[in-house]
Image (cartoon, rainbow, N blue to C red; front, top):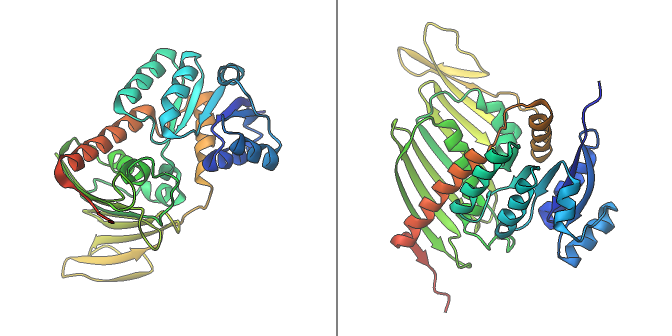
Length: 332
């Protein structure tokens, strides 16, 4: 039985846009890639040269020719492109953050419901093989320790490290914790850009769960690691190396699983396990899921509601920093 192919166009042909174009072309059994729109001649020429694809000069004409659109333009253009696509009743895949402001995100959310179309947001770590391997093992988490550190790259510094990097982890935490936020505290430092480059955040939930998050784009080495503590033990998710370590606490009268175990006290054992991680391309898995939601009416893994909530928390953090918890280095 053949799978319905969806006509798709990409809006934005920068670094990430070209990655999207390549992966969509590889998914030719699911998508019929009909072209891209980007006002930049330089970016467009790179895409044409590398992939031999068609550049469209009129945004609205490309939207009308598609079943669904992929928005990979800079964040400040997300709202305009997605708004036009939703007004034309097109399904939308949009990179994170969903919009530049929560007000814009709310308009897009309401418009998507009115149009009755699928909107999926590119919080790609939900599709990271390591998180997918660990997701079913996360049961009533009570403490998160998260580090997302990146080497400095001028690309992306148009927004704060919160919207650039930390928002991935905010989305993960919010998807795992079934509770309202009670309190947020934050501190940050602006080193080379006009927005925070390093930020430390503590989120306390009504159910007692606590999440400590650190994000930096001023690191010598990259790190994307989350530790999750819960009553049954804890998990270490390494998004960068795509590995998961599980430490289980089991009653002493039960056989201790895992490749390593020892007696913690008279009542319980401490066991180490290495859950299997099935390697895959996370962005490509996003597109497969997007297609599945449209064609087979499956639930959207990262909905616009999810993205709106993550963006709202991100701006609460930004507001905390603006209120006096942001330091700025004086390089003069």
